[in-house]
Length: 139
Image (cartoon, rainbow, N blue to C red):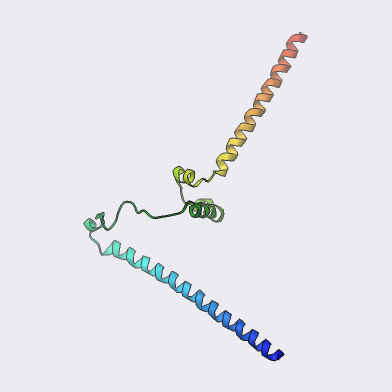
């Protein structure tokens, strides 16, 4: 009975590993297919079309509209900011950042620094003013 349960557990584990391997291979095949498709389309657009065909708005519109949920865009922007080096981060418009609701950490920290420095400067100004008033009274 013990050998049967060990054999069954090993068989099920082997079956799971095989199914997982098949799924990973299928995912890799899909990614390779999409990459190859993009490369072929780029070659067709560059080498097989006349210049006037490239200007057809039906084939190549100026804008492509698609549906994107703000929470997914928000998560993707944060992921790109965390994972990509500063040199490779995409340039995002201020409107998109405001629409998605991302607070720019650098801008916020700079504003906070300016506010605190302004408060410190005003305190120093008051202290100098007090000191100069005290000197004037003594003389």
